[in-house]
Image (cartoon, rainbow over all chains, first blue to last red; front, side):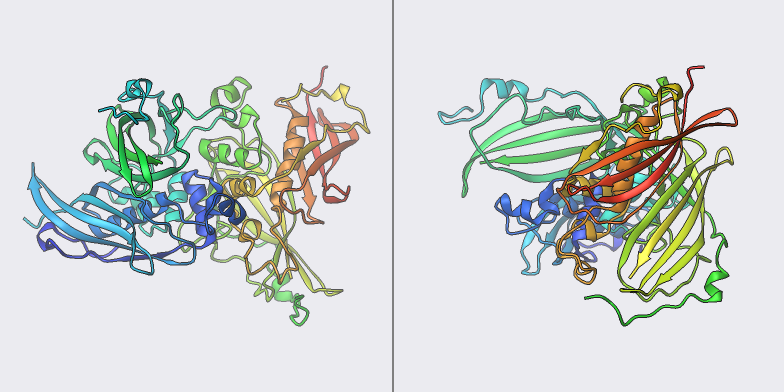
Length: 143
Length: 162
Length: 166
Length: 145
């Protein structure tokens, strides 16, 4: 994890450090183990094709968890994730880059907490947002 | 408001807001590590108990999106949310629309050793006309309560049927 | 395509590593890990799933299926990302030139049951090397692991694993 | 779980009830999750190591077959028995979705240090009757005495 980011240092419109992912078929099976989701469209190509898919696809919930990592790594030891999530708008395939990104949309202080709101998303190699979402985190203040 | 072509029946409307049977989730060091590893987390608080304690946590921290593993009993239908069970609709295709987590760290950060009780309910049925034709959007809300009776997280999920 | 060009030789230096124990590594047995292994082998015996049932049969908790001796603590960079086993300091260094890997055999000796909640300290050592050059060259590496229950200090399992490199 | 076996009721030559399984890819992925062995050899049909190893398809984990032998031995021992040791060697590969049957036979009975010990030959065999995972087991059974 990098240096602690503080509320005062963050500007609306600012992009947070990106996180690049690329899922091997092994990672999809690791995710099945980690999440308990053993649906075969994520590791059995024949099965996936029988359901009408082109091939294996990355679990939506894994992309959601990637966004969780993006935020966790950004807020640092003293920040906290309050809320995060995404919709599943496009499928991603294994062995292709999935770029996780976030942009600060709003800052506010309330009841002694310093909130930062963000748009977050994963994007495929064509730049398409396959999992757009939002997040709310708290950051420490220098005050 | 029910339209002439609505697929939402009175029985379905009666399900809105009704909690399903609670589900027990176990948060342990091994499953926190497995989840973190499968995402690719690099922060030691998800793997190393000493590192987590040094950062003020009770034990290894559950990574974002991980609420523990449901207790599995073979041959027993999964308990929990009033899923699509109990009603049927004419649409054949199902999409997972999205997932959102809300955390209440002031009530406790979920850590290895916690036992979480999840309670789910359908919060709304919504019907729209999209590019794929008429669709039913079902939103569900799951509340995660720890062993001290504190609500530590909520999950909002959307299912699209068309 | 068989890898017939690559050769290997068992040296005295390698033989000197027989029986030299690695540093211990922690293996954890939990209710979810026991259940997941039981699901993985397709067992529906409640002794592996239902804590109350297992206690009623006289066990401490749910019983690990035979073949499961806990999950090694996984620390990124310190464990093998495919097999999960620890890559420890001081373990045997063989510089095996073959890329193919197969399981040759498994033998487990039990001194007690393993149940959810157990924490085990495992040490391993090189127990045997065999090299066969008839046909496709194959190297058989046998490692022995000894698992000690951390709470009681008793050895609960010894396991010999043979891997075939070719 | 079958009824508890007792030492006195077991005879040399007695066979274990056969246990047949035909693991599919999902089963092996669950086994990967349970065992921690995530070798793509067992689930990825495009895994680059398949060809150099002379394989045309994914194969069942040896340790999965070992665990199936373990299931049969554990069932034979019952909750009141105790498995002292069991081991196998992996002699043949089994592809996915094909029947594998675990068999066993009692080879010896003896009493030692007050314990009632039963020895077994155990193995998995494929549909052609080939023993792909031969092994042995030693089990302590309760006595009716």
